[in-house]
Length: 191
Image 1 (cartoon, rainbow, N blue to C red):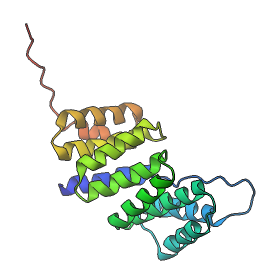
Image 2: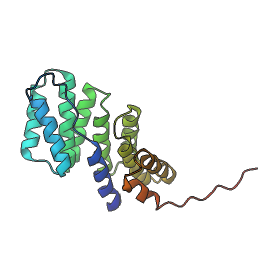
Image 3: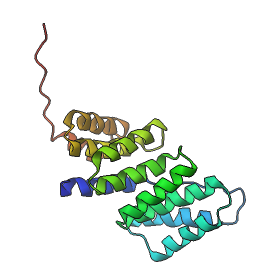
Image 4: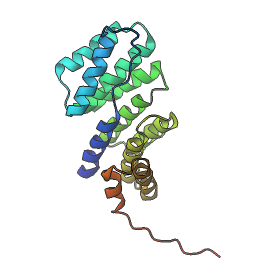
């Protein structure tokens, strides 16, 4: 994978994999909430601390309900992704998806990690699964899938995804910039 793509997917993915929300009903901050906050901070800073990892590991151990455990695993997956530990990110995303296969964010995290491991076809499949779940920030998922498709040699698919990202977020410069690299050649008329 070209270096340009590696840098771009991390930028796109870091915008997307927001901390998976947890279902706190009171005003006290649970270990799961602390994990979610740690993941959000790490993603904003672009780096994960050992304490953030530890907070999420505690949240995973203390989670009594599968949805909370899946959310904490997804958040730790994001921390691993930010820290460049792609195998660990994939493992946590897999574990989260075993508990809840409707977590779009776990598919996105795993897709971003797979793309970093030079597995664009697998990454594109995960991004497609995430899009099927109608998540927030679909523009970033389209952008990341465009990178995967381009790495697979699917220039038409990449163009379509960059265009979709640009249409969903007209003020976001990145997809518009990527579109300038493409030249549209009209197909010859068929008779």
